Length: 317
Ligand SMILES: [Zn+2]
Image (cartoon, rainbow, N blue to C red; front, side, top):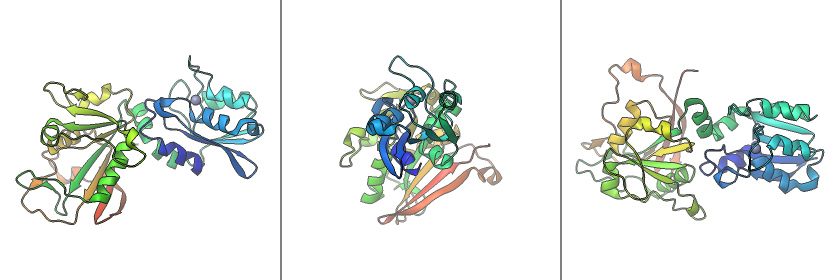
């Protein structure tokens, strides 16, 4: 299951609005088929893995990070039908698909075809690998990650506004990897004007994975950029699983004030700025007590000379 989830995780940012699923077919002690959701969302992971396995799939076990689909499409048979047709004996599913067209019906179709089905192995890791898709299905908007490059003392720029480059090369390479795993990147009008950022992915082999670009502005549209007038407009983005907000301060503040940030990536450089631009303005907090229990530390590690800190928004169960 870990192998299946890893395959799906690598496809994050390329499959929206479909989920980034991973799948392996196991016969005896060996993996005989591998697949992940292909760019644009099709073919599905199970179809790729079954094609990879060919005839060896008969009697084998299939591991998939998400319940196989049960809704017929003009673009092909359901994965549940494909799996049963290939003679798979046992299917291990990490999590059920919350898509109401499948939710439980994929597993039911398999069982009624005589396939042994188990659900739940690797569920937490699978949820993390498809957090964007799952957020879109449960909250009706993409999963939103806010990226910040900060000094030790939490500043994003000198008083003059100079902010290039606070962090080093390894941190910037990590930002490019996050971009490759996003369906869309958004910046504010100010950042666009000041930096004219390309927001492309400059990592060998991943150049093709540069995401769509969006501007938060109530002004006129810019060629090659999609426009959101307000943070709440993310609810219109039905084909975006993962949205990366790259700044600047006003845009970050607007998203935080609207409680539309699910994850914060802080790239912290070992420098002090002192008087300078702080990361956010007023985000709607009036008491320290209200600031607690909203964010959970998820990860922290060194990236060259910098530190990466990852925080996740804690939302009521
Ligand atoms: Zn499918």
